[in-house]
Image (cartoon, rainbow, N blue to C red):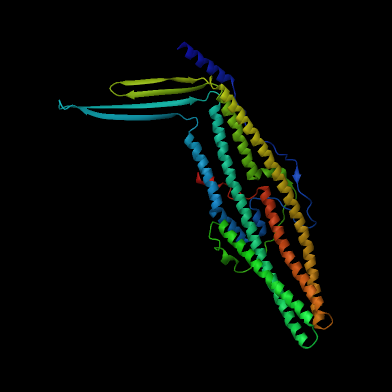
Length: 458
C-alpha cells in the first residue's frame, strides 16, 4: 500500500508541473501583400463576395445555383461525411466516465423436495480516466479539428459546385449564341448564293464564284452540328450537377439568351487575407491542428495514467470496491517514444502540405487575375474588329449588288465578319469563365447561407 500511495503521490505532483503540447496557432498569411495584375483601361476589376454570381444579373443562373446547393449528390456525400465525423467523435466519448451494469437470476430445485430456490444478483462498474497530463484534452482538440476538416471539405464541394454550375451555364449560353451566329451567317450566305446563281445565268458571275460560295455555305452549315453537340453536353452537365437526369433542363434552353455579362462595379486589387476564405486552405489548417494535437496525445502516453474505478455487487450479500488504478509506461517506453516521433513527423508533413496549399492558392489567384484582365482586353479589341468587319461587309455587298465589285470581295468580307463575330462570342464566354475562376480561387460563395448544411443537420 505504501508503494502504491507513493507512486500515486509522485504522479499527481508531476502532473501539476507538466504541460504537454502547445496551443495550436494557425500559421499567418502575409496580409500586407496584395495580388493582382493591372487591369485593362476602362475594364472592370473584381473581388470575391458572398454571392459573386449575382454580378451576372441572370435570374436563371441564380436559380440553378440555389437548386444545385440543395440537390447536388457530391455535396450531399460531403455533408454526410461531416455527420459521420461528428458521430464518430460522439461515440468515442473522450474524457467521459464509462460503466456497465449486469443482472442475473436463476431458479433451482430438487426432485427429492417440493421446494424451489430463487437467486439473483446485480452488479455495476464505473471507471473514469483522470486527465493528469492533458492527453484527453488533446484528443478532444484533435477530434474537433477532424470535424472542422470534414466541414471544410464540404464547403470546398459547395464552392466547386457553384463554379461548375456557373461555368456550364455560361458555356451553354455561349454555344447557343454561336449557333445563332452560324445560322444567321448561313442565311446571309444562302441569299448571296441565290443572287450569284441568277448572275451566272446572266453571264455576270462565273462558275468559280458559284463554287467558292457553295463551299462557304457548306462549311458554315457543317460547323453547326459540332456546336449543337457541345451545347447538349453543357445542358446534360447542368442536369447532373443539379442531381437530376441529364436532359432535365433541356426545356430551359429551348430558346436562346444572352451570354452572361458582368454588371456593377467591383474592387481593384485582392488582399491576401481573403485567401483564408478558401475551403482548401481552411481544411489544410484544421488538418495541421489535428496533427499538432496528436503530438500532445502521444506525449501524454509517456506519462502515468490514473483511472478511478468502482464496482458494486448485490446478491445474497452486498459488496463494493472503489479505488484508483495507476498505469506506469515502463516496459513499452521505447515504442511510445517512437510514436511521439511518428506524430511529430506527421505534423511536419501537415505543415508542409499547408504551405503547399497556400502557395498553390497564390498561384491560382495570380493566374486568374492575369487571365481575367487579358481576356477583357482581348474582348475589347475583338469588339472593334467586329464593328469594322460589319461595315466592310455592308460596303462589299452594296458594291457587288451594284456591279462595282467582285464576288471575291464579298466572300472575303463575309468570312472575316463571321470569324470576328464568332471570336467575340467565344471571348465573352472566356471573360465570364475567368471571372468565375477568379472568384473560385478567392474562395467566395460557399457560405451563401451563412451556415453550412452540416451545421443545419446537426
